[in-house]
Image (cartoon, rainbow, N blue to C red; front, side, top):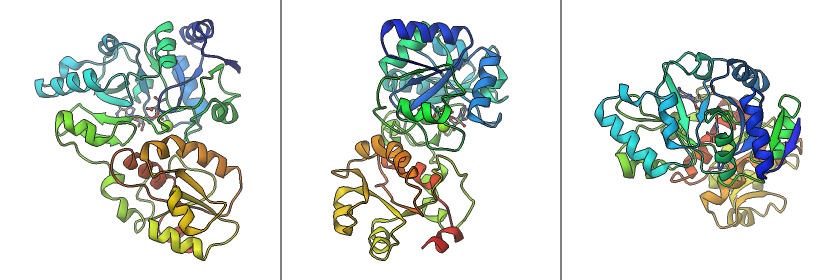
Length: 341
Ligand code: TXA
Ligand code: MG
């Protein structure tokens, strides 16, 4: 693995490497991605192998220009009402942390889409990502650059540590701004559905196209504690994580064990708890700040080999939904939680 900077010369090197079928990790505004040419079957196969990702979990194709959308997706197959929604969303929210699922073009290899007749497409806003994609074939498959199921990477160092041996290049441009992955929206049928809450808040999407269906963790968040195994484990640290409300957090920390680590949402709650070595995702209780810190703090906590991580829920609106989704999927559930407490 070779590290590259975000200089123009280095991005040309990485872009050529992608054209040649090699793998290059690169920064986006959400998290670091593990890129390979979206039309190159052997590059796609290597992505799945590097991440140990099951072949049934499809990849997002990243483009640098809105015009490239029609190289991978077939908008024409949609009814007019959905075509209008695609136009509105892509013109307003791209470039940015929104992935849209559309009917796919037959030219996109089945490997990229796990044999589905749909394709997920995203136009990132990070200037380094866009330049790199433009210097490559213009259609780059890029899952988050982490081993399947583990915490996502928001820094080049996370990628190096976790996947350094599996990939050819890492472009380092510092920490990712948003810190949680893009919002994934299924636009192939009505009603439009949110498949993954992420960097673009649901509220922003609904302002443009009206109500969209909620995701599993948004609707069943409260039940998740009572129904073990209902949600797929994902984005998970090695240390078992228990998700708590603010009140539960204060109670738990009052009677806690020394081996445990406390991850507060905001500094005010940490102060109130009196846990001096606790972590806080945000100083002022701001969801954007908390999201930007989320994975980096979890990576750091996971190196401490603590007994349990007790994590406080974020507020439900805006980026809080994405934070709660990731924490909920990272957590142990149901009976395991009872035993932990
Ligand atoms: O912010 C992001 O989206 C990051 C950066 C690197 O762009 N990428 C990312 O990719 O998070 P990944 O592979 O970790 O997550 C892609 C998600 C998965 O949940 C996958 O199941 C879903 O998108 N997805 C991909 N193609 C799909 C399709 N055709 N239909 C439904 N879901 C799809
Ligand atoms: Mg991922």
